Length: 371
Image 1: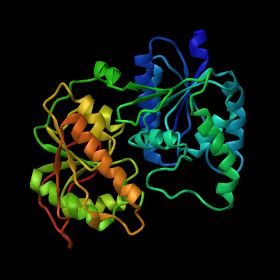
Image 2 (image 1 turned 90 degrees about the vertical axis):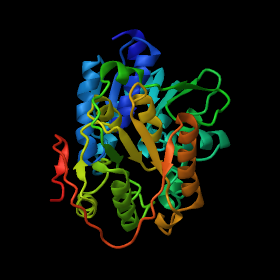
Image 3 (image 1 turned 30 degrees about the horizontal axis):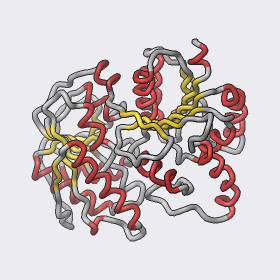
């Protein structure tokens, strides 16, 4: 390991973060470094992370798997094991500045350079909040309150300080998202050059695919309205495959099979890699999410078109704030401007629907299509 690599420590809590760490490493130039994976509890995320870890090792990275969640003892042990590497690190690469665990690690680190890579569209909100000097709060959540929030507040403030550039500490944002510029922070465009050099171009199915979203699971969209909208869009645009998000639950997907007759595909890697490796639909439909910014870059050398689904106000749950709906509108509008995408709408009719559309064979199918 080179001296430069030995001083660079990267943390990944999701498969997408690890992919973007590899993209950053390809862009920043040669040099070994250590990636520490802090896996979540979800089995789908853990499975994708294990496969991404193999890819990272094959690309020359040193990868450490550290269980940092669960019980009262595990987090403390993980923090103790990471204390010395954090003190030695001259550069930290992180993927989710909103993560409390990452904020705790940032507060433990000495003065060092910081690189933030994408964990999705949240990067857009991160730079905006940092520019305003606010505490970092995810776009779909209210600001934390109560005793626990008060106890964590000093840690959160130290994390924001670490993420703010000062003399002797640089901050870089490596992103495929349109972000709000901030004085002192350098922004490097993630063009997915590494992914495009390693895989593809993909074979095209000639049909249409729909990208699943976790907006129901995060409490943003009502499930019945979401399923009805997907059903209508699938029929209107000839969609046969639904590429499920790793956080979507099995019961919701079973309902989708019965209503829309779609083939449910559980990608075993981040969708960006799945799309690049193929096969992939000639047309991809997506609700406002990360992929409306990443897939146009990943598939720029193909004839694939990406369309964004407009979200009706009626689909939101009661507790969704104007900030959350405004953020999703910004995701859509910025993708239209940056990539020239088209928009689609659905009326999301109420009441159950059925479909006899057959599914196709697919190695990642999680459940059989409706007969």
